[in-house]
Amino acid sequence: MNNKPVKIVETALRDGHQSLSATRMRTKDMIPVLEQIDNVGYHAVEAWGGATFDSCLRFLDEDPWERLRTIKKHLKKTPVQMLLRGQNILGYSHYADDVVEEFAKRSVANGVDIIRVFDALNDVRNLECAMKAAKAAGAHVQGAFVYTISPYHKDENFLKVAEDLISLGADSICIKDMAGLLAPYAAFNLVTTLKSKLSVPVEIHTHYTSGMASMTYLKAIEAGVDIIDTALSPFSGTTSQPPTESMVAALIGHERDTGIDLDAFGPLADYFNEVKKNLAKDFNLNTNISIDPKVLSFQIPGGMLSNLVNQMKELGTEDKYAELLKEMPKVRAELGYPPLVTPTSQIVGSMAALNVTLGRYKMIPTQVKDLVRGKYGRTPAPIDPEILKLVIGNEAQIDHRPADDIAPQIESLKQKLAEEGFPNASIEDLLSYAVFPDVALAYFKKHR
Ligand code: CO
Image 1 (spheres, helix red, strand yellow):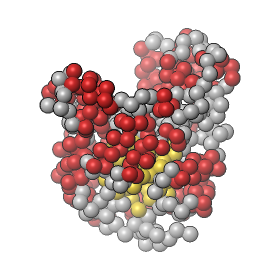
Image 2 (tube, helix red, strand yellow):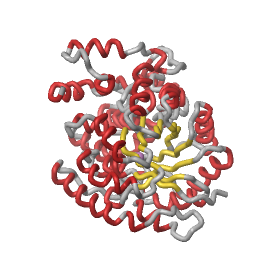
Image 3 (cartoon, protein in one colour):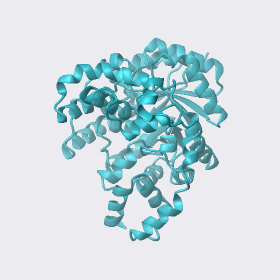
Image 4 (tube, helix red, strand yellow):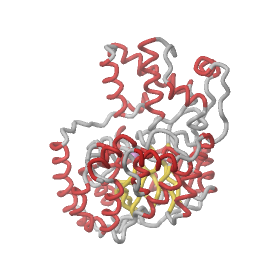
């Protein structure tokens, strides 16, 4: 049985504000407290990747690479952690291996110590390239699998994904529960299974969306989980992680006490309360986010529900909302039970919305066709044969690694950037341009 202190990864600088403040926290909001954060005694600080890269360029007029270097400069003792979507890097489609390799390499060179990689379909072939490059660059590589509920997702299936990740070189494993679906006793069983078979550390990442997150962590801790992801209180709760202070307090005096001094958090919480208020004011953010246990019935992440409602309002079909809630799980089953996380959540969601407005599979978006073709990787279950025929006719599905079909991109990106007037772009700028061409170019035109 694990009787070591529970380790804490602080997420306020990435997932916390991504979940609660539309990813709008600016580097200048972080700098004043980075040294205090560095002194807390965290296992790591998650501070980069996910949606922050896009947000820096698109909304904050910041260079994401510059942010990373600044954070690294101030976090002298605590490892910097990032979230990477495997072959999707930080974007929404697959990139060529040369771009993925270079991105992983430059992330490490600019300050990332721990790279958490995941794939929306848990197809580990989509993680091979990023993992190999990150390891070669000297990073700790954490393999994450996304947690979801379906007849095809049993503890043994998750264990198999974890074992495959370890055989690809994962230094630790993360259970990534992006929608807050993981119930406390299910977490106990899953962690028990993983801990009994794996020799690397196991971390758990959940969201408060359904209201179960702290209970889930406590049962995971009882089952021996090594590391938990939490956010300082102002950026915790609802659609974010459990509060760091409360989890630390809950373990005081227990054999797995984190050993972190609770008093370290007071000034940090006060500071981030102000930051959160300022972000809401400066960016006119909706701060009225609440816990939504409906996610447990429909398995639709909270943010996505509100997006779908908005979409249907635009189409003038909000009266079909109840129908949509039934259609989502049906489409998900027909499309092979993909976990609902970027980008599969959008793919399933838009297909379901079109089905209830125009008739089932009357209009099929390219992304749905590509998912059925196998261009995102292997779905957890086979595509329903009738739907397969409806979507791609007699076209064959691919069964190889999708990125094998993508030719190297770096040279052509260099050429394009030169044509746009940036012949001497740095490799970091080239990578920004590879993933978010339009916003990167707008940034370069202003700043380079
Ligand atoms: Co998350």
